[in-house]
Every structure is written in structure tokens, then in C-alpha cells.
Length: 88
Image 1: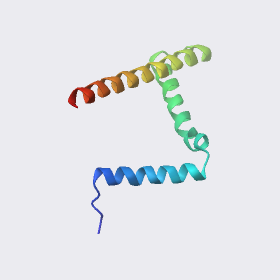
Image 2: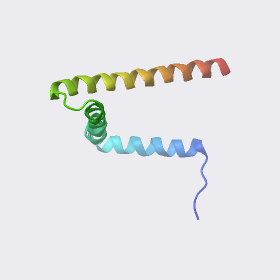
Image 3: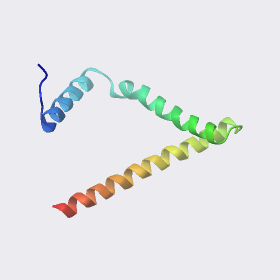
Image 4: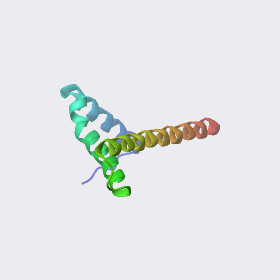
């Protein structure tokens, strides 16, 4: 029989598991494959949009794609915090 857990309980269990995993392993090594895959996505986006660029230019543009994504995330976070503050 499957357990029906509340969102709060699921979140707490996930945090517990994450802390246990990070206590056993180096966090940077655990997350490296994800960071590598994300970086490759930026490179692939640049190469698909503008084929024929030098490797140096692809890397430069990929870095700007990464920075733009971080700015989008920061803006979304800021808006969510403002929305939450207005609801309180």
C-alpha cells in the first residue's frame, strides 16, 4: 500500500535524505554531472542558433546564455518574494 504523504512531510523527508547524502559525499562531485550537462546545453544552443562560430566565440556566447538564465531566475525569485510579502 502506497503512503499518502503531505507536501510538508515529503519536503522534510527529501531534506533529510539530502543532508544524509551530503554528509557522506563531496557535494561538488555529486553535482558535477548536472553542471556539465547544463553547460553543454548552453553550448549546444549557441551552436544550433549560429553554426560556424569559432570555439572561443561559442564559449563566450554560452557564458552569456548562462548569465542571462541566472538573471531570469533572480528576477523570478524577486517577484515571488514581493508577491509573498504582499500576501502577508
